[in-house]
Image 1: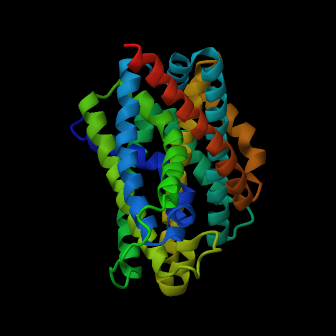
Image 2 (image 1 turned 30 degrees about the vertical axis):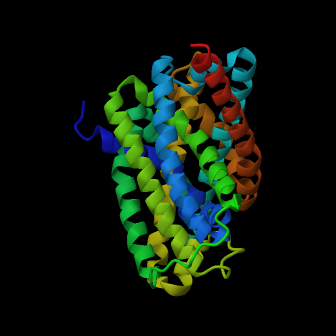
Length: 343
């Protein structure tokens, strides 16, 4: 085992979550910034939840000897609930992969404006090539790219934040910011668990627990920096599709292309994780090699990548995401009733 396994797990966890909505600030604006300083508390709560939920799902998967989300769902929920949760999450993964690739296409179009979409081609080649090396390839890619992404995000938000000041928080007992934080954490975690569960096969529990906890804290820290930055420019960016990039364009134009590439890296890491999880799932049902399944998935999604990025985000995440979250909660309740109370 490698000595840096904990860090590799942490960056892989971050890579599975930090896609277009997170890095662009769009999700953070919607789920947190609209609630003011209470939203900033929600960001911190979300980071802690990412840490604890990740540790819990690894503990449950290890205890039940499940190495894929399909096995976990069927073990906990039985055939009916397990089947429904399995199909829904697989569709969510497929939709998320399409969103990441469509977003990569639009960013590269805006940056380079080539007739042939070289950015999409490069993205697909990296995603496919990384997945050919399986989980090791995913972890190695994140090990390289996520630290770069984190450093750039810290530098850019540091340049945008003029002063650190929190107003007195009122209405402590208003629970809207807590509910928003739970929804955001839930549907992002549902996607990330598809990559976390296979890690139980080859990595020690201690490395998994420490890596996942570190990853959750780092996600919370990055989200807080982005949320605090957006909070300074709210409500000017309230209707922006890519709020953080719009702020950078207006106030730090020299960093615009740097963060555009950073946003592309975020989509790249999440797309890679999505394809890996889909491939692992389909190998359980289709008698083909992983390489053939990867190519089959890519050929299937190509027509959908042409759809507008914003339309895909608006449809896939609110609809399939909330359904996946609901099913995950049902499974958790079922696990509690089946394995905790009865034992």
